Amino acid sequence: MIKLFECKVYYHLNMKSLKGFLTILILSVLQSVVQGSSVNVNPIKLEKMLQDITDSLNTDKSRTQVSLNRTLVAMLDTILSDDQTCRGKLHSIEEKFGAASVEYSALIDTIVYKDEINLSKVQSILDRYGWLGKEEIGERGPLTLFLVIQHAPLPVQLKYLPVMKAAVKVGNASTQNYAYLEDRVALAQGKRQVYGSQIARSKETGMYYVLPLEDPINVDKRRAEVGLPLLKDYLNQFGVDWNVDLFVEHRPEKTQIVAPSILMYKKRERTIPFNNRTSTN
Image (tube, rainbow, N blue to C red; front, side):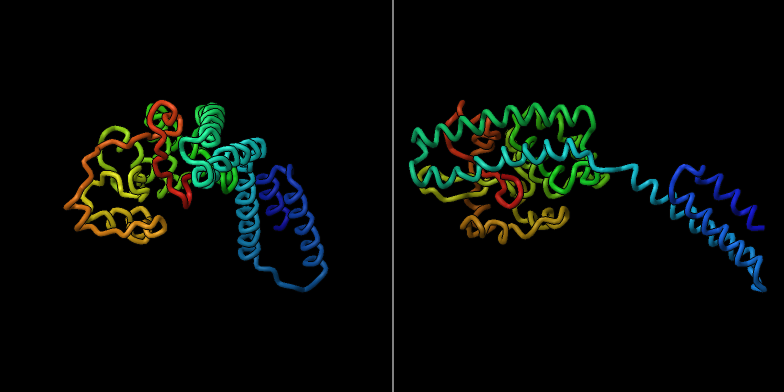
């Protein structure tokens, strides 16, 4: 009887894996023990045990088929560093030298230069592999893809917005980050944002304010649907005291973000629009 079970395992595993070999070895030992003892082995239970072993091995095999692409992981880690390091210096350089300073202008030039290089690399990845998940490109990989597209010109954002949407459905991209990109694209198209993720800073007062928002009364319902916190809590970190009634009464007249991409900064005024500081700088 055990010989028959051995054949089944041979069939499923093809004896190509070490686990398969070890399984046959264990079964052979079990056969010897059973033959040399008076133990009554239930063949049905034994066959079930073998099937469980086979299923487990097949599961392990399927898991190893999706493995980290370490080359892409390393590339995306570098891109993430390039994308965030200079942006992290914007506030301190502006505070120290001013937005009209040579130092601030040089930093913007560096960001523009690195963004162009990063975008070329990320587009190559997306066009070849699609929007990969953390299983293939690590925990920070999908975030890096999003950040580079978030900072890209509108035509590029429009190209990859549906790609990211499809990735969200299969768990390869963040629902929250997709909401940020939706808001950015809407504002760049002259529409109102949906989730209130995009804010800007007044040149006159230096205070942040929420950019044009669709149906502000129900914004928290929409934010909850995609896993975002209350807008009031989100804006507190920027010193914005959210009051929906005042917002409705004094709704911003502008319907388009000043500069939807860092690539646009040199072509327009040097007002830095908001990039979500918690995850989308």
